Image 1 (cartoon, helix red, strand yellow):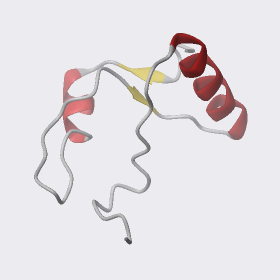
Image 2 (cartoon, one colour):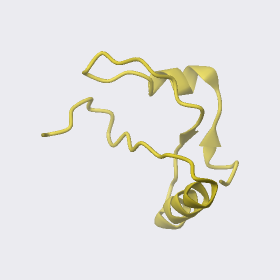
Image 3 (cartoon, one colour):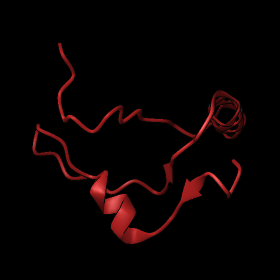
Image 4 (cartoon, helix red, strand yellow):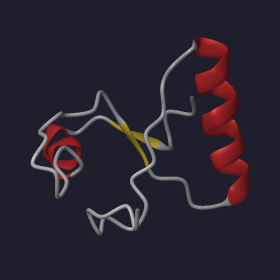
Length: 65
């Protein structure tokens, strides 16, 4: 994945570690793409590396399920 898009800073990763379920899991990295081409690159690289992706959305902590 493009290192320009990935964030490894612990405080940033911790801000994505919890949702409304109460589950706490700090991700290895956070990707914050700014356009569709970066999203495509992230997904393509993750698929090639067999890296799982969890989409955070707008950080509302709900799934609308």
